[in-house]
Image (cartoon, rainbow, N blue to C red; front, side, top):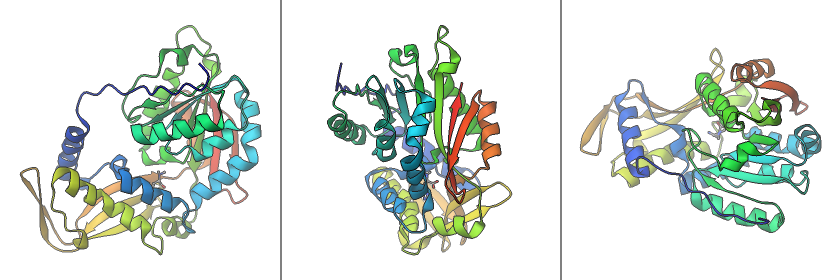
Length: 328
Ligand code: AVI
C-alpha cells in the first residue's frame, strides 16, 4: 500500500558478534593479515565515511552526484518509469533521490542495507518526500545470499541500483558472483530476462597521484576511518590494539588496478583478543580494503561475464567516474 515502510528483517544463522569474531580471528590468522572492509561501517565508521565523501581529494562522490544531477532523466528513460528500484547498500540514499525524482507514479523502492536503524530512518525520510511511493526496506548483508520479498521478481521491471563504486571493494571474482546473484534475484522462471536492469556506479582507472591523494587526505580522515576498524574490534571483541602503534597506508597497485589500504604496525608488538595472541613485526600489515578501478571496457566485460549486457554509460567530462546501465 502507499507509503508502506514495513522493514523485512534478515534471518541470521550466526549472531552479528559471533560472525565478527569468527571473521576477525580468521583474518588475523592469515598471512598476510586481512580484515574485511565491510566491518568499517559501525556508527563512527559510517559517519567518518560521510566525512570522506565531502573531502576535497575524494572526487568519487562529488563526481557521481554531478553525473546523476545531469543524467538521471536520461537514465530513467532507459530504465522505464514504472520501475521497482532495488538498491544494494542504500545507506542514506542521497544519490537515489536524484533517481527517484525522475521515476513515474507507479514506481516502488526497495532499499537493502545491513544497518536496520539507518534503513528505518532513511525509509521514513523518503516516504515523507515520496508519500505515494511504496517503500519496502530489507535488512540484509548483501555480501551473502539473501531473500528479497517474493513480489519483486514478479514485478515487470526491476532495476538494481548499486551506486558509489561499492562494487570496487570486491575482487573481480567476487564482483562477478555478486552481479550474477543480483541478476538471478530479479528474475523468476516466467518473466522476461530483459526486464531486469542494473544501474551501477564505477570508479575509473586514472593517474596514480589523483587516486592516492583520494585515499591519503591531508586532514587524515581516511586514516581515522581505517584505524576505526581497530577501535571497533577493541570495543566489540575486547581486543587491546594500541591505536598509536598502527599507521595508515593506501597505495595504488597499477598492475592490479586497485587501491590497497592497510594498517601497518609501527613497532614490534603483541595484540590479544578472544584468548589468543597475535604478534606483529615492525612494518607488518593488515589489509583492510581493496578499491578496484576499472576502464569502461574492463567493467563492461566483467558484467558480461555475470550475464549482463551494456546499454549505456555516462561519465563526467574528465572521465573520472561512470554510471553504467545494463540489461539481463
Ligand atoms: C565505499 N567505498 C566505495 C569506498 C572506496 O572508495 O572504496 C570506501 C573508502 N575507503 C577509503 N575511502 C573511501
